[in-house]
Structures are given as C-alpha cells and as structure tokens.
Image (cartoon, rainbow, N blue to C red; front, side, top):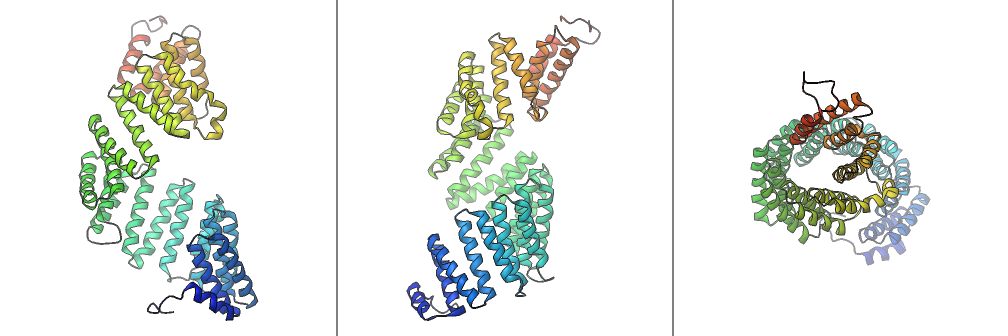
Length: 485
C-alpha cells in the first residue's frame, strides 16, 4: 500500500481475513497483531501472532515465520518477560538467517540482544549484538551497523565497562558519519561525553560537547540547541570550570524559559544550584534548588523532589542551620523510601549532633540500627552503613562512652572496602582507634592518629587536623617518645 492510499480499517482487515489463505492470511494476522499491541492488548496480540506463526509455517514462508516470532518477542518484551522475549527473537533470527537479507537478520539479532540484556544475560546479549554487526554485508546499511555498536555500548554500560563503551560509541559515530546522519551523530556525542564523565575524563567530554554545540547551533535535529548548552554546562561544572558552566547553563535557561519547558527549567536550576555550591555560595544554591523542587513538584516527579530536598538539607547543614536541616531530613525520611530514607535518618542524626542533642541523635540512628538484619536484602551499601556508624561513634565520644565508640570504629575498619570510604569517615575511625590504643599500643596509636590527620587534611577538615595534631602528635624534637602529650 502506498503512502497516498488510505489505511485499511481493522474491520476491513477482519473481513479480508475470512477469505485469505496462506501467506496473505499470515500477513493480515500480523497486521492485526501489531495494532492490538499498539493498543496494549497483549493477550490478543499474542493469540494473533501465534496463529500467524502457524499459518506462515503451513505456507512455508520463512520471512513471515520470522516476523511472527519477532512479534511474539516484542509482546513478551512489553510484558517484561525478557527471557521468553529473547527466546522468541532467537527463533526469529533462525527463520530469517537463510533468506539472504543481512539487514533483516541483523535487526532481529539486535532485538534478541536487547531482550537478553534486560534479562541480565549480558554474555548472550553481547553475542547477538556482535552477530548483528558481523553479519552485515560490508559497506551496506551503516544505520543498522551503528545501531549494533550502540546496542553493544548499552550492554557494556550496564556492566560498568566504560572504556569498552567508549570504543563502541566511537565505532557507532563513525558509521553514522559515513551516511551523514548528523542528528544521530550529535546524540552519539552526548553519550560519549557522559561515558567520559563516568571515568573522570571531563576535559575530553567538554571538548566533544563544545564541537557538538557548534554544530547544533546551525542544525535542527529534533532537539533545540539549548539541550546541548545544558549538557556542555553540566560537563564544564564537573570539569571545574564554574564560570564557563554557568554561562552555558544560563544561555540554556533563557531558551527554556521562552519555551516554558518546565522539565528543562528544573534541570537547569539544579545545575545552577550545584555551580553556586561549588563556589561556596550556599545561600544562592539553596535559592536555585528551591526553585527546582517547585518545578519538579508540579510535574509529579517525586524522585527528583527528594533529590532536591537532599541537596537542600546538605547546604543548610553547611551554613550551620542545623535545625532547619534536621527538619528537612525528617521530612525526607517520612516521605522517602528505601535508601533515600535511610540516608535522611543518618543526616538528621548528624544535624542533631551539631546541635549538641546527642541522645536524640542516637535515637534517630536507632531506626537504621534496627534495620541491620535487612540491610543486605534492601541493598544498603556498606558506605551508607559506615557513615551511619561514624555518626554514632562520634556521638558516643561526645557522651563520654569511648569504649563503645572504640568497638564500633574497630568493626567499621574491618569492612573489606573500608579504604574506599570517604576520607572524613576513615579519619574519624583512625582517630577513635588511635585514642583507644594510646596506653596499650602507643606506636600503633601514634600511626593511627598521624593517618587521621592526613585524612582530615585530604577531606578539607583543616580544624580537625589541626586540633588532633596539636593535642596528640608530638612536635619534632619535643619529646617524641613521650606518650602522654
């Protein structure tokens, strides 16, 4: 049917189905299945696809047999039955492979790869993504070739293999450039920049996005240029170029405000808030994050609202407004879920500690303590547990319960990934252990306290480092063997 011809109605398809046989009948069944799938009636879709499969097999039509398998695979996928989806797509690959059309087979392989990936079967996913790429005829169908490389990158991204992700995306970009698909090249550049950022190579990300912005300003590809201004500003912030970042973010904000793009405005307010926070302009950061929160709230983006509240509470704490921060964290703990609520309860305990409300701080931590047995199943990382325990430990010290603090610090320091924790947490643990062993293990104590000083300095906690150094560590040439100074 040409584009000028009116679309056949569903009633007409059902009428034609009654008279059709063989491959014609299978085609009509597949068209009806596709329409049912678009309407979300997956039970009907599956029934029609199964009938189409049987009809195509009876007609010895391998192409329609393959298409019926793919229809079933897409339907399973829509129902989040990814393993069954993968199995159906693999059957589709087998049916199409002998027909000689490498592009059809490659696209079927990519559908199988996506299903295997969603099922967490990454080795099989990579196998089919590579089959799609290697099965294409050389010099043909660069668009599908690019999709194969992009699919490979998506699978590797889930595994955290960022170097391999970057390699695959450059290959995809090369294929897209060959056929001058400029819009897709720009999208690939954004993915590349995000991947470079994941491994901390912000300069490469900024350079890439700088070129992308130059092209986007003169090329319309479905995204306005302000999206690329936003991405470049975000990456410049991560690279530490705050003035440059704010310049592009504000430029993007102007366009988003003109277009009344609420979601885009909210994202930009978040980025501008982070820029001001990086410059220690916390009042200004709070102003912008409050605006972002309001915009996300009207969009019903509860997760983003919680993220804004988290930043708000941290910056309030940084300004010494501990009571307001505690109330904000209490609100997050009450309305948030899972890990967000867990972190909020720990942050509230820290707020209360700085208000000298030590007993209340321990009570706030008690809820998280009660969840110890469930932490592993709930996915609470050891870093979150360690931070909670560090707050508890310093609170116990303030309450003059050093033996309990020492035991807790010792336990935290036995965690297998302790050396990967934040410098401030490790510094506190070394300090508590060093103080607790001054009488029994003076040499180890001195080493622990010296290490604590170094970690406090690394974390930017200069007063803590100075206090500890002056209080416990001997000056050079002034009684270095005196364990009591």
